Amino acid sequence: MKPIPPSSCSAQATVIEKRLKREIAKRKATEIKLKERCRDYDALLSGSLLMQEQLRHLSHKVLQAQEEERKRISRELHDEISQILTGITVKLAALKLESTSNSINVKKKIDTTQRLLEKSVATIHRFARELRPAMLDDLGLVPALLAYMKEFGMRTGIRVQFNSVTADKLKTLDSLNRIVIYRVVQEALTNVAKHAKAELITVSINLPPDALNMEINDNGISFNVNRLFVARKQKHLGIIGMRERVEMVGGVFAIESEPDKGTTISIQIPFKHNVA
Ligand SMILES: Nc1ncnc2c1ncn2[C@@H]1O[C@H](COP(=O)(O)OP(=O)(O)OP(=O)(O)O)[C@@H](O)[C@H]1O
Ligand SMILES: [Mg+2]
Image 1 (cartoon, rainbow, N blue to C red):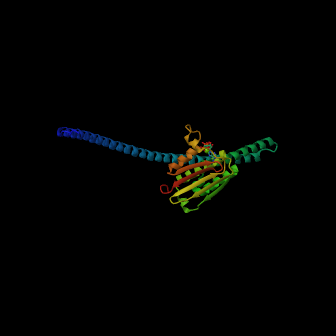
Image 2 (cartoon, helix red, strand yellow):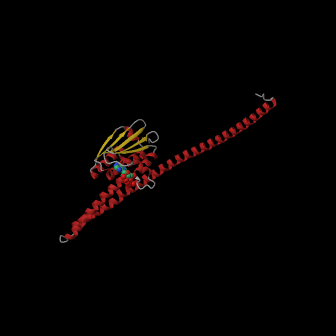
Image 3 (cartoon, rainbow, N blue to C red):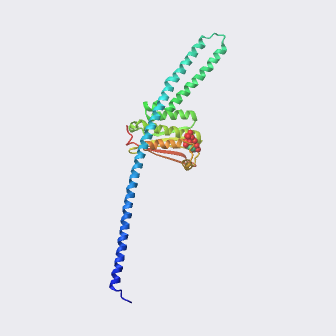
C-alpha cells in the first residue's frame, strides 16, 4: 500500500474540519429555530389557555344571566299572570251566583270557562316551576329534586328511586352548582320519558372528598352515544346542553348506554372552586 504524503493528509484534515464547522453551524441554527418555535408554541398555548379561561368565564356569565331571566319570567308568570287568572275565576263565580235562574245556558258557559281557567292556572304553575323552581333557592337542592321527581313520577308513571347522602356539605353548594345539577336531572328524566321506554330510574348522589358525584340510570332501551357526539348538524341539544352546563362549572360529564343496562349519566362537580 502506498503511504499518504503528509501534505495530502493535512489537506484532508482541513476539509473534514471545515465540514464539521459547517455542520456545527447548521445545527446551531436549527437549535435556535427550534427554540424560537418552542417559544412561539408556548405563547400560543398560554394564549389559548387564556382564551379558554375567558370563554369559561363568559359561559358562566351567560348561564347566570339565563337563570336570572328564567327566575324573573317564572316569578312574573306565578305572581302576576296566575293572580290575574285567579281573579277572573273569582269574578266568574260571583257572576254565576248573580245570574237569574232561567239562564242555565249562561251558567254552563261560565262553568266551562272556569274549568278552562283552572287548567290554565295549573299549567302556568307547572311552567313557572320548570322555568325556575323557587324551592331550589328557598329550601335547597334535595327538597327541590324530591319535589320534581314526585311530580315527574305522577305525570309519567315511571318510578324514580332517589339515593342521596344527607350531609350538611350539600347545603354549601352555591346556587350555580345547584341549578346545574337540577337541570341535568330535569333533562335526563325528560329524556327517559321521551325515549327510553323505561319503568325505573335511579338517581344517586355521593360526596367523595372535594366533589359531588351524581348518577342517573334507567332500565330502558339503549342508544348509540358515539353517533350523537359526531353528528355534524346537531338537532338534539339536551345531552350536549347537559355536558356544557357541567363543564362550565369545571365538572366532568359522561354518558353510557348499553343493551340490557339502559342509559347511565354520570357527573362529577368539584367542590373546591364553587363553594359559596
Ligand atoms: N335515556 C335515554 N334512553 C334512550 N335513548 C335516549 C336517552 N336519552 C337520550 N336518548 C337518545 O339520544 C337522543 C339525543 O337526546 P337529546 O336529549 O340530546 O335530544 P332530544 O331529547 O331528542 O331533543 P331535545 O333537544 O329536546 O332534548 C334522543 O333523540 C334519543 O334518541
Ligand atoms: Mg332531550
